Amino acid sequence: MASLYPFYNWTKELSEEDVKLPVLFIGHGSPMNGIEDNEFSQTWAKMGETIQKPKAVLVISAHWLTRGTHITAMDNPKTIHDFGGFPQALFDVQYPAKGNPELAKATKSLIHTTDVGLDHDWGLDHGTWTVVRHMYPNADIPVLQLSIDYNKPPQYHYDLAKQLASLRKKGVLIIGSGNMVHNLRMVDYSKMNVPNYGYDWAVEMDQVFKDKIADKDHKALINYETLNKASKLAIPTPDHYFPLLYSLGLQDDKDDTSFFNDKLVGGSLNMTSVKIG
Image (cartoon, rainbow, N blue to C red):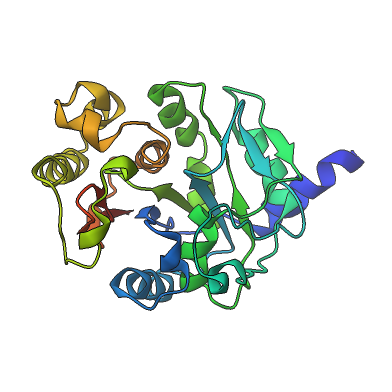
């Protein structure tokens, strides 16, 4: 019985609420958004102010790719600076949000399609902290990460997310963090500061994604490789796309969708983000 106590304590504390928290998919873009005061970070800050304050945040980040599915289960997750070539000021950032081992165990118990590992080594990578530090600058809300099993197909991720739905009514804000259009090899760095600059194929795919999301055509988005030829340019690898499938998997029939930070960057990236519910 002693081993069940943390789960009991957490579920007792997180009583079911009348209103579900929304689900977010956030295009996180450059790590520099973590320290810059720009239109993207300002919108994240406003989102944190307008959403009912969560009791915990669970992030599926494009930057934690694993074999098997894992969840951070430590008391104090470290701030991971998983990038190079940026100013020292970015490496100096620490986001000291607590973890919550009890929530990690509770989340593990919800997932029946795979055995979720309890991780004590990872932490909060830049797909998480660069966004969440703007939303909750006081770092006073527990933050956990759920990894992406990179060996699994898109349907696996969508189906796994559905099993997390009950957390929405227990005060847990779930965020998928990646980018729908994400082709780093084709970025035009000379035009990074040109507002809303995108190649024709990126503009096309940005609209296709928004149309499919608005129509709740999840099947088409799961089978993204068959959307059209431009999808292969928008998603050369699925690491930044899979977080979107987690967010979509948590949408129910009554949830509306809205878009924010709907901009293209550097020709081959978009920051388009989604609020579900």
